[in-house]
Image 1 (cartoon, helix red, strand yellow):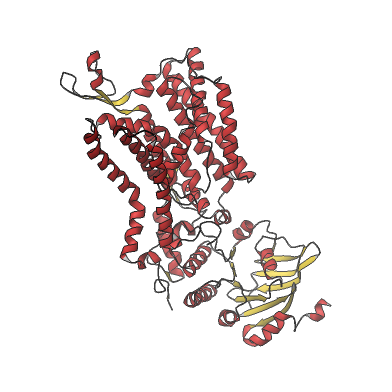
Image 2 (spheres, rainbow over the protein chains, first blue to last red):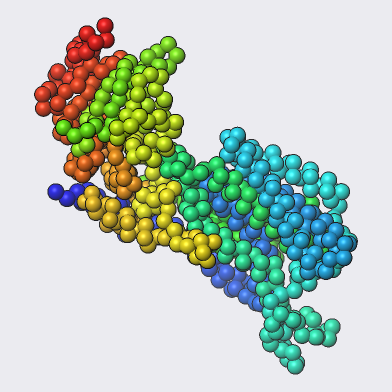
Length: 380
Length: 256
Protein backbone atom coordinates (compact mmCIF):
# COMPACT_ATOMS: atom_id res chain seq x y z
CA UNK A 1 0.00 0.00 0.00
CA UNK A 2 1.17 3.47 -0.82
CA UNK A 3 0.77 6.29 1.63
CA UNK A 4 -0.24 9.12 -0.59
CA UNK A 5 -0.05 12.26 1.46
CA UNK A 6 -0.82 14.34 -1.57
CA UNK A 7 -4.29 12.83 -1.73
CA UNK A 8 -5.05 13.96 1.81
CA UNK A 9 -4.94 17.62 0.88
CA UNK A 10 -1.33 18.23 -0.01
CA UNK A 11 0.27 21.48 0.93
CA UNK A 12 -2.42 24.12 1.37
CA UNK A 13 -0.61 26.42 -1.07
CA UNK A 14 -1.42 24.13 -3.97
CA UNK A 15 -5.09 24.07 -3.04
CA UNK A 16 -5.57 27.81 -2.68
CA UNK A 17 -8.02 29.81 -4.73
CA UNK A 18 -6.44 31.97 -7.44
CA UNK A 19 -7.38 35.11 -5.51
CA UNK A 20 -5.58 33.98 -2.39
CA UNK A 21 -2.61 32.84 -4.42
CA UNK A 22 -2.40 36.33 -5.93
CA UNK A 23 -2.43 37.89 -2.45
CA UNK A 24 0.29 35.45 -1.43
CA UNK A 25 2.42 36.38 -4.43
CA UNK A 26 1.88 40.08 -3.78
CA UNK A 27 2.91 39.67 -0.16
CA UNK A 28 6.25 38.30 -1.35
CA UNK A 29 7.02 40.99 -3.91
CA UNK A 30 5.18 44.01 -2.55
CA UNK A 31 8.35 45.74 -1.33
CA UNK A 32 9.81 45.65 -4.85
CA UNK A 33 6.52 46.88 -6.32
CA UNK A 34 6.22 49.61 -3.71
CA UNK A 35 9.76 50.79 -4.47
CA UNK A 36 9.05 50.82 -8.21
CA UNK A 37 5.75 52.69 -7.82
CA UNK A 38 7.40 55.20 -5.50
CA UNK A 39 10.24 55.89 -7.93
CA UNK A 40 7.73 56.32 -10.76
CA UNK A 41 5.72 58.72 -8.64
CA UNK A 42 8.75 60.87 -7.86
CA UNK A 43 9.93 60.77 -11.48
CA UNK A 44 6.60 62.30 -12.49
CA UNK A 45 5.98 64.55 -9.50
CA UNK A 46 9.42 66.09 -8.88
CA UNK A 47 9.68 67.95 -12.25
CA UNK A 48 6.13 69.30 -11.77
CA UNK A 49 7.01 70.88 -8.42
CA UNK A 50 10.45 72.14 -9.30
CA UNK A 51 12.96 72.09 -12.11
CA UNK A 52 14.93 69.08 -10.85
CA UNK A 53 14.67 65.55 -12.18
CA UNK A 54 14.43 62.66 -9.77
CA UNK A 55 16.40 60.10 -11.74
CA UNK A 56 19.87 61.45 -12.23
CA UNK A 57 23.35 60.15 -11.63
CA UNK A 58 23.91 62.58 -8.80
CA UNK A 59 20.62 61.85 -7.09
CA UNK A 60 20.99 58.09 -7.37
CA UNK A 61 24.50 58.28 -5.93
CA UNK A 62 23.29 60.52 -3.10
CA UNK A 63 20.67 57.92 -2.23
CA UNK A 64 23.27 55.15 -2.25
CA UNK A 65 25.55 57.12 0.05
CA UNK A 66 22.61 57.92 2.32
CA UNK A 67 21.62 54.29 2.78
CA UNK A 68 25.14 53.06 3.65
CA UNK A 69 24.75 53.27 7.45
CA UNK A 70 21.13 52.07 7.43
CA UNK A 71 22.03 49.06 5.29
CA UNK A 72 25.04 48.16 7.42
CA UNK A 73 23.13 48.40 10.69
CA UNK A 74 20.30 46.45 9.06
CA UNK A 75 22.49 43.61 7.77
CA UNK A 76 23.50 42.39 11.21
CA UNK A 77 20.03 43.13 12.54
CA UNK A 78 18.61 40.86 9.82
CA UNK A 79 20.48 37.88 11.28
CA UNK A 80 19.45 38.85 14.81
CA UNK A 81 15.75 39.24 14.00
CA UNK A 82 15.68 36.05 11.90
CA UNK A 83 17.00 34.27 15.00
CA UNK A 84 13.99 35.75 16.85
CA UNK A 85 16.06 38.31 18.76
CA UNK A 86 16.57 42.06 18.62
CA UNK A 87 19.70 44.21 18.88
CA UNK A 88 18.98 47.68 20.26
CA UNK A 89 22.66 48.47 20.76
CA UNK A 90 23.74 48.85 17.12
CA UNK A 91 23.23 52.64 17.02
CA UNK A 92 25.65 53.38 19.83
CA UNK A 93 27.93 50.55 18.72
CA UNK A 94 28.24 52.35 15.38
CA UNK A 95 29.21 55.48 17.34
CA UNK A 96 31.80 53.48 19.25
CA UNK A 97 33.13 52.14 15.94
CA UNK A 98 33.44 55.68 14.63
CA UNK A 99 35.32 56.92 17.73
CA UNK A 100 37.59 53.86 17.92
CA UNK A 101 38.53 54.02 14.24
CA UNK A 102 39.17 57.77 14.45
CA UNK A 103 41.42 57.32 17.51
CA UNK A 104 43.24 54.43 15.80
CA UNK A 105 43.79 56.40 12.59
CA UNK A 106 45.02 59.44 14.49
CA UNK A 107 47.20 57.33 16.74
CA UNK A 108 48.80 55.23 14.03
CA UNK A 109 49.38 58.29 11.83
CA UNK A 110 51.13 60.01 14.73
CA UNK A 111 53.45 56.99 14.86
CA UNK A 112 54.30 57.66 11.24
CA UNK A 113 52.11 55.09 9.54
CA UNK A 114 51.27 55.91 5.93
CA UNK A 115 47.68 57.03 5.50
CA UNK A 116 46.51 53.83 3.78
CA UNK A 117 47.86 51.77 6.65
CA UNK A 118 46.28 54.08 9.21
CA UNK A 119 42.95 53.61 7.42
CA UNK A 120 43.32 49.82 7.47
CA UNK A 121 44.14 49.93 11.18
CA UNK A 122 41.13 52.18 11.69
CA UNK A 123 38.90 49.63 9.95
CA UNK A 124 40.02 46.82 12.22
CA UNK A 125 39.79 49.01 15.34
CA UNK A 126 36.20 49.93 14.49
CA UNK A 127 35.06 46.47 13.42
CA UNK A 128 36.84 44.44 16.10
CA UNK A 129 36.10 46.91 18.90
CA UNK A 130 32.42 46.70 18.01
CA UNK A 131 32.50 42.92 17.77
CA UNK A 132 33.66 42.74 21.39
CA UNK A 133 30.42 44.45 22.43
CA UNK A 134 28.41 42.05 20.26
CA UNK A 135 30.16 39.06 21.77
CA UNK A 136 29.30 40.29 25.26
CA UNK A 137 25.67 40.73 24.16
CA UNK A 138 25.64 37.21 22.75
CA UNK A 139 27.18 35.59 25.81
CA UNK A 140 24.71 37.22 28.20
CA UNK A 141 21.75 36.34 25.94
CA UNK A 142 22.80 32.74 25.18
CA UNK A 143 24.44 31.65 28.42
CA UNK A 144 22.66 33.70 31.07
CA UNK A 145 19.27 33.56 29.28
CA UNK A 146 18.51 37.26 29.64
CA UNK A 147 16.08 38.51 26.97
CA UNK A 148 17.89 40.17 24.05
CA UNK A 149 15.75 43.30 24.38
CA UNK A 150 17.01 43.91 27.93
CA UNK A 151 20.65 42.95 27.30
CA UNK A 152 21.09 45.12 24.22
CA UNK A 153 19.24 48.02 25.86
CA UNK A 154 21.70 47.79 28.74
CA UNK A 155 24.83 47.53 26.60
CA UNK A 156 23.57 50.36 24.43
CA UNK A 157 23.74 52.67 27.48
CA UNK A 158 27.13 51.29 28.47
CA UNK A 159 28.53 51.74 24.98
CA UNK A 160 27.07 55.22 24.81
CA UNK A 161 28.99 56.12 27.96
CA UNK A 162 32.19 54.51 26.73
CA UNK A 163 32.01 56.22 23.33
CA UNK A 164 31.38 59.64 24.89
CA UNK A 165 34.18 59.12 27.41
CA UNK A 166 36.65 58.05 24.73
CA UNK A 167 35.76 60.96 22.48
CA UNK A 168 35.78 63.34 25.49
CA UNK A 169 32.27 64.34 24.45
CA UNK A 170 33.41 65.99 21.26
CA UNK A 171 34.24 65.06 17.69
CA UNK A 172 37.54 63.21 17.40
CA UNK A 173 39.55 65.48 15.12
CA UNK A 174 43.18 65.94 14.20
CA UNK A 175 43.16 63.01 11.79
CA UNK A 176 45.33 63.03 8.68
CA UNK A 177 43.31 63.94 5.60
CA UNK A 178 41.46 60.70 4.83
CA UNK A 179 38.54 62.24 2.98
CA UNK A 180 39.74 60.68 -0.24
CA UNK A 181 38.78 57.27 1.17
CA UNK A 182 35.33 58.46 2.15
CA UNK A 183 34.39 60.74 -0.70
CA UNK A 184 36.29 59.58 -3.75
CA UNK A 185 34.77 57.01 -6.03
CA UNK A 186 35.29 54.14 -8.39
CA UNK A 187 33.98 56.07 -11.41
CA UNK A 188 33.64 59.72 -12.30
CA UNK A 189 31.35 61.30 -14.84
CA UNK A 190 31.74 64.78 -16.23
CA UNK A 191 28.59 66.34 -17.61
CA UNK A 192 28.54 68.80 -20.45
CA UNK A 193 31.06 69.50 -23.11
CA UNK A 194 34.78 69.92 -22.91
CA UNK A 195 37.73 67.58 -23.32
CA UNK A 196 37.04 65.75 -20.08
CA UNK A 197 33.36 64.88 -20.74
CA UNK A 198 32.29 61.30 -20.04
CA UNK A 199 33.36 58.51 -17.71
CA UNK A 200 36.65 58.24 -15.86
CA UNK A 201 37.86 55.24 -13.87
CA UNK A 202 39.38 55.65 -10.38
CA UNK A 203 40.84 59.12 -10.89
CA UNK A 204 38.84 62.31 -11.44
CA UNK A 205 40.03 64.39 -14.40
CA UNK A 206 41.71 67.70 -13.63
CA UNK A 207 38.93 70.25 -13.94
CA UNK A 208 38.85 74.03 -13.69
CA UNK A 209 37.06 75.21 -10.56
CA UNK A 210 34.03 76.44 -12.44
CA UNK A 211 33.44 72.97 -13.86
CA UNK A 212 33.65 71.07 -10.53
CA UNK A 213 29.89 71.19 -10.17
CA UNK A 214 29.61 69.10 -13.31
CA UNK A 215 31.59 66.24 -11.82
CA UNK A 216 29.57 63.28 -10.51
CA UNK A 217 31.08 60.59 -8.32
CA UNK A 218 29.74 57.13 -9.10
CA UNK A 219 30.07 54.35 -6.53
CA UNK A 220 31.86 56.21 -3.78
CA UNK A 221 34.11 53.99 -1.68
CA UNK A 222 31.72 53.61 1.28
CA UNK A 223 29.11 52.35 -1.20
CA UNK A 224 31.60 49.87 -2.65
CA UNK A 225 32.62 48.64 0.81
CA UNK A 226 28.95 48.25 1.75
CA UNK A 227 28.26 46.31 -1.45
CA UNK A 228 31.09 43.92 -0.58
CA UNK A 229 29.72 43.46 2.96
CA UNK A 230 26.23 42.86 1.51
CA UNK A 231 27.64 40.16 -0.78
CA UNK A 232 29.48 38.48 2.09
CA UNK A 233 26.52 38.38 4.47
CA UNK A 234 24.20 37.23 1.66
CA UNK A 235 26.54 34.33 1.14
CA UNK A 236 26.66 33.57 4.87
CA UNK A 237 22.89 33.74 5.39
CA UNK A 238 21.73 31.94 2.28
CA UNK A 239 24.54 29.50 1.45
CA UNK A 240 26.19 28.33 4.64
CA UNK A 241 25.36 26.10 7.58
CA UNK A 242 25.59 29.12 9.88
CA UNK A 243 22.82 30.85 7.92
CA UNK A 244 20.66 27.73 7.93
CA UNK A 245 21.08 27.45 11.70
CA UNK A 246 20.11 31.12 12.09
CA UNK A 247 16.78 30.35 10.43
CA UNK A 248 16.33 27.16 12.46
CA UNK A 249 16.95 28.95 15.77
CA UNK A 250 14.36 31.57 14.88
CA UNK A 251 11.89 29.00 13.56
CA UNK A 252 11.96 26.59 16.50
CA UNK A 253 14.62 27.07 19.16
CA UNK A 254 13.79 23.79 20.88
CA UNK A 255 13.97 21.85 17.60
CA UNK A 256 17.33 23.46 16.87
CA UNK A 257 18.67 22.37 20.24
CA UNK A 258 17.32 18.85 19.89
CA UNK A 259 18.85 18.58 16.42
CA UNK A 260 22.24 19.12 18.04
CA UNK A 261 22.81 22.64 16.71
CA UNK A 262 25.25 24.48 19.03
CA UNK A 263 22.63 27.15 19.66
CA UNK A 264 24.61 29.16 22.22
CA UNK A 265 27.66 29.44 19.97
CA UNK A 266 25.51 30.42 17.02
CA UNK A 267 23.69 33.12 19.00
CA UNK A 268 26.98 34.61 20.23
CA UNK A 269 28.24 34.72 16.63
CA UNK A 270 24.99 36.30 15.43
CA UNK A 271 25.22 39.18 17.93
CA UNK A 272 28.94 39.58 17.23
CA UNK A 273 28.16 39.85 13.51
CA UNK A 274 25.46 42.42 14.19
CA UNK A 275 27.88 44.61 16.15
CA UNK A 276 30.60 44.14 13.53
CA UNK A 277 28.49 45.51 10.66
CA UNK A 278 27.60 48.44 12.94
CA UNK A 279 31.30 48.98 13.65
CA UNK A 280 32.02 49.04 9.91
CA UNK A 281 29.28 51.67 9.53
CA UNK A 282 31.04 53.73 12.20
CA UNK A 283 34.39 53.36 10.44
CA UNK A 284 32.88 54.54 7.13
CA UNK A 285 31.33 57.59 8.80
CA UNK A 286 34.78 58.46 10.16
CA UNK A 287 36.14 58.35 6.61
CA UNK A 288 33.29 60.45 5.31
CA UNK A 289 33.56 63.22 7.93
CA UNK A 290 37.30 62.93 8.55
CA UNK A 291 36.57 62.59 12.25
CA UNK A 292 35.01 60.32 14.83
CA UNK A 293 31.62 61.09 16.31
CA UNK A 294 30.06 59.51 19.40
CA UNK A 295 26.57 60.63 18.43
CA UNK A 296 26.49 59.62 14.77
CA UNK A 297 24.81 56.23 15.17
CA UNK A 298 22.02 56.59 17.67
CA UNK A 299 19.48 58.33 15.39
CA UNK A 300 19.94 55.55 12.81
CA UNK A 301 18.89 52.63 15.03
CA UNK A 302 15.16 52.92 14.48
CA UNK A 303 15.54 53.61 10.75
CA UNK A 304 17.60 50.47 10.37
CA UNK A 305 15.05 48.34 12.24
CA UNK A 306 12.32 49.90 10.08
CA UNK A 307 14.30 48.98 6.94
CA UNK A 308 14.64 45.37 8.12
CA UNK A 309 10.92 45.07 8.83
CA UNK A 310 9.86 46.75 5.58
CA UNK A 311 12.19 44.31 3.84
CA UNK A 312 10.10 41.39 5.09
CA UNK A 313 12.06 40.03 8.04
CA UNK A 314 9.54 38.57 10.48
CA UNK A 315 9.78 39.94 14.01
CA UNK A 316 8.68 36.48 15.20
CA UNK A 317 11.89 35.11 13.71
CA UNK A 318 12.57 32.47 11.11
CA UNK A 319 11.96 34.45 7.94
CA UNK A 320 13.66 37.20 5.93
CA UNK A 321 16.37 37.89 3.37
CA UNK A 322 19.36 40.19 2.97
CA UNK A 323 18.09 41.59 -0.31
CA UNK A 324 14.83 42.45 1.49
CA UNK A 325 16.75 44.56 4.00
CA UNK A 326 18.57 46.38 1.18
CA UNK A 327 15.22 47.06 -0.52
CA UNK A 328 13.78 48.26 2.80
CA UNK A 329 16.69 50.69 3.20
CA UNK A 330 16.22 51.92 -0.36
CA UNK A 331 12.52 52.52 0.24
CA UNK A 332 13.30 54.72 3.25
CA UNK A 333 16.03 56.65 1.40
CA UNK A 334 14.01 57.14 -1.80
CA UNK A 335 11.05 58.28 0.27
CA UNK A 336 13.14 60.77 2.21
CA UNK A 337 14.94 62.14 -0.84
CA UNK A 338 11.78 62.33 -2.91
CA UNK A 339 9.80 64.17 -0.26
CA UNK A 340 12.63 66.69 0.15
CA UNK A 341 12.70 67.26 -3.61
CA UNK A 342 8.94 67.78 -3.53
CA UNK A 343 9.58 70.49 -0.92
CA UNK A 344 7.49 68.56 1.59
CA UNK A 345 8.57 69.48 5.13
CA UNK A 346 11.14 66.92 6.23
CA UNK A 347 9.11 65.80 9.22
CA UNK A 348 6.59 64.14 6.93
CA UNK A 349 9.15 61.45 6.18
CA UNK A 350 8.77 60.14 9.72
CA UNK A 351 5.02 59.89 9.36
CA UNK A 352 5.25 58.11 6.01
CA UNK A 353 7.97 55.70 7.16
CA UNK A 354 5.89 54.86 10.24
CA UNK A 355 2.86 54.05 8.12
CA UNK A 356 4.94 51.89 5.76
CA UNK A 357 6.39 49.90 8.70
CA UNK A 358 2.93 49.10 10.04
CA UNK A 359 1.62 48.20 6.57
CA UNK A 360 4.62 45.91 6.07
CA UNK A 361 3.82 43.98 9.24
CA UNK A 362 0.12 43.79 8.30
CA UNK A 363 1.05 42.32 4.93
CA UNK A 364 3.30 39.76 6.62
CA UNK A 365 0.46 38.76 8.94
CA UNK A 366 -2.09 38.47 6.13
CA UNK A 367 0.28 36.02 4.50
CA UNK A 368 0.33 33.97 7.69
CA UNK A 369 -3.45 33.91 7.77
CA UNK A 370 -3.61 32.61 4.22
CA UNK A 371 -0.96 29.93 4.61
CA UNK A 372 -2.51 29.00 7.93
CA UNK A 373 0.81 29.37 9.65
CA UNK A 374 0.55 28.94 13.38
CA UNK A 375 2.64 31.00 15.73
CA UNK A 376 6.27 30.17 15.27
CA UNK A 377 8.38 28.68 17.97
CA UNK A 378 7.86 25.72 20.25
CA UNK A 379 4.28 25.14 19.15
CA UNK A 380 3.89 23.39 15.84
CA UNK B 1 13.31 -15.24 19.61
CA UNK B 2 15.97 -12.74 18.67
CA UNK B 3 18.00 -10.90 21.28
CA UNK B 4 16.40 -7.80 22.73
CA UNK B 5 17.53 -4.44 21.39
CA UNK B 6 16.57 -2.74 24.63
CA UNK B 7 16.39 -4.35 28.05
CA UNK B 8 15.30 -2.50 31.15
CA UNK B 9 16.17 -4.16 34.45
CA UNK B 10 14.43 -3.11 37.69
CA UNK B 11 14.41 0.53 36.70
CA UNK B 12 13.38 2.97 39.43
CA UNK B 13 13.03 6.74 39.32
CA UNK B 14 12.10 8.93 42.27
CA UNK B 15 11.22 12.60 42.46
CA UNK B 16 11.65 13.58 46.10
CA UNK B 17 9.28 11.37 48.07
CA UNK B 18 7.38 10.26 45.00
CA UNK B 19 8.44 7.07 43.24
CA UNK B 20 7.38 7.70 39.65
CA UNK B 21 8.72 4.39 38.28
CA UNK B 22 9.03 1.36 40.56
CA UNK B 23 11.36 -1.46 39.56
CA UNK B 24 10.14 -1.91 36.00
CA UNK B 25 11.72 -4.58 33.77
CA UNK B 26 10.99 -4.76 30.07
CA UNK B 27 12.48 -6.11 26.81
CA UNK B 28 12.04 -4.79 23.28
CA UNK B 29 13.01 -7.01 20.33
CA UNK B 30 13.71 -6.10 16.71
CA UNK B 31 10.69 -5.73 14.50
CA UNK B 32 8.01 -5.37 17.13
CA UNK B 33 5.66 -2.59 18.03
CA UNK B 34 5.13 -2.42 21.76
CA UNK B 35 2.40 -0.23 23.18
CA UNK B 36 2.95 1.44 26.54
CA UNK B 37 -0.36 2.10 28.26
CA UNK B 38 -1.44 3.73 31.45
CA UNK B 39 -3.58 6.47 32.92
CA UNK B 40 -2.20 9.97 33.43
CA UNK B 41 0.46 9.86 36.13
CA UNK B 42 1.03 6.12 35.74
CA UNK B 43 4.72 6.71 35.03
CA UNK B 44 4.76 6.14 31.24
CA UNK B 45 6.41 9.43 30.42
CA UNK B 46 8.97 9.16 33.21
CA UNK B 47 9.93 5.66 32.08
CA UNK B 48 10.32 6.84 28.49
CA UNK B 49 12.33 9.86 29.57
CA UNK B 50 14.72 7.55 31.43
CA UNK B 51 15.23 5.58 28.21
CA UNK B 52 15.69 8.66 26.04
CA UNK B 53 18.17 10.37 28.34
CA UNK B 54 15.96 13.17 29.67
CA UNK B 55 15.96 11.64 33.18
CA UNK B 56 18.63 9.48 34.80
CA UNK B 57 17.25 6.44 36.69
CA UNK B 58 17.93 6.15 40.44
CA UNK B 59 18.24 2.38 40.35
CA UNK B 60 18.25 -0.46 37.85
CA UNK B 61 19.94 -0.59 34.49
CA UNK B 62 19.29 -0.07 30.81
CA UNK B 63 20.94 -2.40 28.27
CA UNK B 64 20.95 -1.23 24.67
CA UNK B 65 22.16 -3.68 22.01
CA UNK B 66 23.35 -5.88 24.87
CA UNK B 67 25.55 -3.40 26.69
CA UNK B 68 24.73 -1.18 29.67
CA UNK B 69 24.20 2.48 28.76
CA UNK B 70 23.95 5.70 30.76
CA UNK B 71 22.56 8.64 28.84
CA UNK B 72 23.34 12.03 30.34
CA UNK B 73 21.31 13.90 27.71
CA UNK B 74 18.78 13.12 24.95
CA UNK B 75 21.54 13.85 22.44
CA UNK B 76 23.59 10.95 23.88
CA UNK B 77 20.62 8.62 23.45
CA UNK B 78 20.09 9.82 19.89
CA UNK B 79 23.71 9.22 19.03
CA UNK B 80 23.22 5.57 20.02
CA UNK B 81 20.14 5.34 17.81
CA UNK B 82 17.27 5.88 20.25
CA UNK B 83 15.03 8.39 18.56
CA UNK B 84 12.07 9.95 20.35
CA UNK B 85 9.36 11.66 18.33
CA UNK B 86 7.40 13.97 20.59
CA UNK B 87 4.04 15.48 19.95
CA UNK B 88 5.56 18.86 19.27
CA UNK B 89 7.64 17.21 16.54
CA UNK B 90 10.86 19.14 16.98
CA UNK B 91 10.83 20.37 13.41
CA UNK B 92 11.53 23.90 12.21
CA UNK B 93 8.32 24.86 10.42
CA UNK B 94 9.95 27.71 8.54
CA UNK B 95 12.38 25.36 6.75
CA UNK B 96 11.72 22.89 3.94
CA UNK B 97 11.80 19.09 4.09
CA UNK B 98 15.51 18.54 3.28
CA UNK B 99 16.55 21.30 5.71
CA UNK B 100 14.60 19.56 8.46
CA UNK B 101 15.85 16.06 7.69
CA UNK B 102 19.43 17.36 7.75
CA UNK B 103 18.92 19.88 10.56
CA UNK B 104 22.15 20.14 12.54
CA UNK B 105 23.85 17.60 10.24
CA UNK B 106 23.85 19.48 6.94
CA UNK B 107 25.73 18.17 3.90
CA UNK B 108 28.32 20.59 2.62
CA UNK B 109 30.34 21.43 -0.47
CA UNK B 110 33.95 22.21 0.27
CA UNK B 111 35.99 24.81 -1.61
CA UNK B 112 39.59 25.95 -1.28
CA UNK B 113 40.58 22.86 0.70
CA UNK B 114 37.65 23.10 3.09
CA UNK B 115 38.22 26.77 3.89
CA UNK B 116 34.85 27.73 2.42
CA UNK B 117 31.88 25.44 2.97
CA UNK B 118 28.47 25.87 1.42
CA UNK B 119 25.27 23.90 1.90
CA UNK B 120 24.95 21.10 -0.62
CA UNK B 121 21.24 21.65 -1.25
CA UNK B 122 21.11 19.36 -4.25
CA UNK B 123 22.58 16.36 -2.41
CA UNK B 124 20.34 16.94 0.60
CA UNK B 125 17.28 17.11 -1.64
CA UNK B 126 18.26 13.88 -3.37
CA UNK B 127 18.93 12.05 -0.11
CA UNK B 128 15.66 13.32 1.37
CA UNK B 129 13.80 12.02 -1.64
CA UNK B 130 15.43 8.61 -1.17
CA UNK B 131 14.62 8.58 2.56
CA UNK B 132 10.97 9.43 1.92
CA UNK B 133 10.76 6.91 -0.94
CA UNK B 134 12.02 4.12 1.32
CA UNK B 135 9.00 4.75 3.55
CA UNK B 136 6.74 5.27 0.52
CA UNK B 137 5.98 8.83 1.59
CA UNK B 138 5.08 11.08 -1.32
CA UNK B 139 4.91 14.85 -1.27
CA UNK B 140 4.26 16.95 -4.37
CA UNK B 141 7.23 19.16 -3.54
CA UNK B 142 9.92 19.06 -0.87
CA UNK B 143 11.20 22.60 -1.21
CA UNK B 144 8.43 24.50 0.56
CA UNK B 145 8.51 25.41 4.25
CA UNK B 146 6.89 22.52 6.10
CA UNK B 147 4.45 24.89 7.77
CA UNK B 148 2.39 24.34 4.62
CA UNK B 149 2.22 20.58 5.32
CA UNK B 150 -0.49 18.87 7.37
CA UNK B 151 0.15 17.48 10.85
CA UNK B 152 0.41 13.94 9.53
CA UNK B 153 2.80 14.94 6.78
CA UNK B 154 5.05 16.65 9.29
CA UNK B 155 4.90 13.54 11.46
CA UNK B 156 6.06 11.63 8.38
CA UNK B 157 8.98 14.04 7.92
CA UNK B 158 10.02 13.49 11.54
CA UNK B 159 9.85 9.72 11.08
CA UNK B 160 11.78 9.85 7.81
CA UNK B 161 14.46 11.93 9.51
CA UNK B 162 14.81 9.37 12.30
CA UNK B 163 15.02 6.50 9.81
CA UNK B 164 17.54 8.31 7.63
CA UNK B 165 19.82 8.79 10.63
CA UNK B 166 19.66 5.07 11.42
CA UNK B 167 17.32 5.02 14.37
CA UNK B 168 17.55 1.58 15.99
CA UNK B 169 14.69 2.16 18.39
CA UNK B 170 11.85 4.59 17.82
CA UNK B 171 9.82 5.99 20.69
CA UNK B 172 6.62 7.74 19.66
CA UNK B 173 4.62 9.78 22.15
CA UNK B 174 0.92 9.94 21.24
CA UNK B 175 1.72 10.07 17.52
CA UNK B 176 -1.88 10.22 16.33
CA UNK B 177 -3.04 12.98 18.67
CA UNK B 178 -4.48 16.05 16.97
CA UNK B 179 -4.66 14.31 13.60
CA UNK B 180 -7.67 13.72 11.38
CA UNK B 181 -8.78 10.14 10.85
CA UNK B 182 -7.17 9.60 7.41
CA UNK B 183 -3.96 11.09 8.74
CA UNK B 184 -4.04 8.78 11.76
CA UNK B 185 -4.26 5.78 9.44
CA UNK B 186 -1.24 6.99 7.49
CA UNK B 187 0.86 7.41 10.60
CA UNK B 188 -0.10 3.90 11.78
CA UNK B 189 0.79 2.59 8.33
CA UNK B 190 4.20 4.24 8.66
CA UNK B 191 4.74 2.60 12.04
CA UNK B 192 3.95 -0.79 10.49
CA UNK B 193 6.46 -0.08 7.76
CA UNK B 194 9.14 0.81 10.33
CA UNK B 195 8.50 -2.51 12.06
CA UNK B 196 8.77 -4.35 8.74
CA UNK B 197 12.18 -2.75 8.27
CA UNK B 198 13.23 -4.16 11.64
CA UNK B 199 13.06 -0.94 13.66
CA UNK B 200 11.24 -1.61 16.93
CA UNK B 201 8.74 1.02 17.98
CA UNK B 202 7.56 1.93 21.46
CA UNK B 203 4.16 3.51 21.13
CA UNK B 204 2.88 5.58 24.02
CA UNK B 205 -0.83 6.07 23.67
CA UNK B 206 -4.16 5.92 25.40
CA UNK B 207 -6.09 5.34 22.17
CA UNK B 208 -7.04 1.66 22.47
CA UNK B 209 -8.09 1.22 18.81
CA UNK B 210 -4.53 2.23 17.83
CA UNK B 211 -3.14 -0.34 20.23
CA UNK B 212 -5.15 -3.14 18.70
CA UNK B 213 -4.52 -1.90 15.17
CA UNK B 214 -0.74 -2.06 15.21
CA UNK B 215 0.90 -3.26 18.41
CA UNK B 216 2.31 -6.78 18.76
CA UNK B 217 2.76 -6.56 22.50
CA UNK B 218 1.80 -4.16 25.23
CA UNK B 219 2.62 -3.31 28.76
CA UNK B 220 0.35 -1.44 31.15
CA UNK B 221 1.58 0.75 33.98
CA UNK B 222 -0.30 1.82 37.07
CA UNK B 223 1.12 4.06 39.80
CA UNK B 224 4.68 3.57 38.60
CA UNK B 225 4.53 -0.22 38.37
CA UNK B 226 4.17 -2.57 35.47
CA UNK B 227 0.84 -4.33 36.08
CA UNK B 228 0.52 -6.25 32.81
CA UNK B 229 2.67 -7.46 29.92
CA UNK B 230 0.77 -9.30 27.20
CA UNK B 231 0.60 -10.15 23.54
CA UNK B 232 -1.97 -7.82 22.06
CA UNK B 233 -3.84 -10.75 20.55
CA UNK B 234 -4.32 -12.27 24.05
CA UNK B 235 -6.28 -9.39 25.51
CA UNK B 236 -9.18 -7.06 24.83
CA UNK B 237 -10.19 -3.50 25.62
CA UNK B 238 -12.28 -4.18 28.77
CA UNK B 239 -9.40 -6.12 30.28
CA UNK B 240 -6.89 -3.35 29.46
CA UNK B 241 -9.12 -0.78 31.07
CA UNK B 242 -9.20 -2.86 34.25
CA UNK B 243 -5.41 -2.91 34.26
CA UNK B 244 -5.20 0.82 33.63
CA UNK B 245 -7.66 1.52 36.47
CA UNK B 246 -5.66 -0.63 38.86
CA UNK B 247 -8.40 -3.26 39.23
CA UNK B 248 -6.14 -6.04 37.93
CA UNK B 249 -2.47 -6.58 38.60
CA UNK B 250 -0.45 -9.50 37.25
CA UNK B 251 2.61 -8.61 39.29
CA UNK B 252 1.04 -7.88 42.65
CA UNK B 253 2.89 -10.77 44.25
CA UNK B 254 6.27 -9.51 43.03
CA UNK B 255 5.57 -6.04 44.38
CA UNK B 256 4.44 -7.19 47.82
